[in-house]
Length: 359
Ligand code: F6P
Image 1: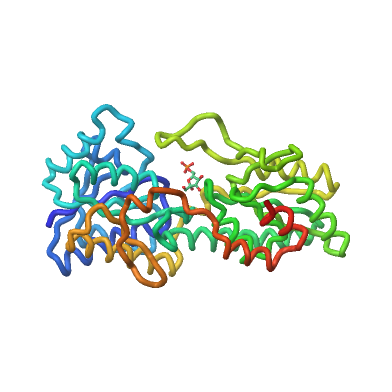
Image 2: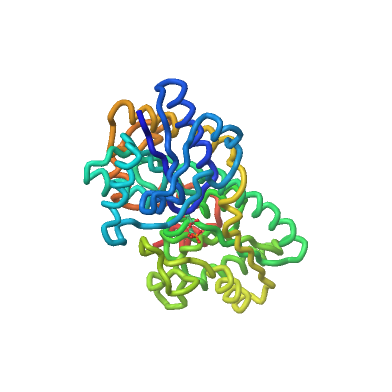
């Protein structure tokens, strides 16, 4: 079979591991032939591709980024965009396409599927916010990087009697903040899902210091909604500028600086910020992500040969299963109550009652 592969959206550790697994199983077990489309959907729009064979996937397992490169191109936003993608697939005689991406990339995959293209999706994002699967690959690596950073920030915060505010990625979901905050022993964790009151954040830190601790660690998700209003529900995410990408997403960032200023004003404790940014997305995938990405790749090529099109390889429990793409893109998967309960159990009651889990 002739199979096309592309990687779309923000890059993510483990993309190369998926590509490698698809190509190796396809070549070893199905005698498939592969074409890699470059830079996400742009590769299909502009007919940019490279042949993919066993030698091109040699040595890529531990490499971050993607050998196919990526972009946030949305063909549905271009004149005849989807038709141009279909024409490219026909020109290359592609019989099935594997799209590796998050909700944006997979929403285009679904639209192409509705137009008759044989597509299989693979769930990728450090944000872990795709529905239909328990975990996306890349998330574990991002959490490990953030946790290590929080550990490092701890020692310098302690040495200087400071409050440190660590801003992590995750867009509209607080998964990275929750997992790295819990694993890194943060004192306050702020996520987009739960409105918070900055006065309560300051009060929590003041009380902690009054109890004899001289430093505090705050982990804040980039999408957490900031408000100085009496009602924290009126908060809004902090954006870098007013621009939006082709999928309508604003660039988030900057909440750590605002929060640090407000905490310092209210407590008089010296406060510093760390914005982890793209460090969370770069470099080698964790062993867990290499394994998960490999399993997703194998699952995707098997789905192609079982004609399970319009579906995505997903992790449920510890099994790789196939779920409809439509279900995966229907909504964002935000932080669940079980994870919130873990944070509540471990954090100061004041914090959890009134901010992190309080409504
Ligand atoms: O979706 C992954 C992600 O890293 C988000 O956490 C973040 O908001 C966004 O991408 C950043 O996008 P870009 O790399 O385009 O600035």
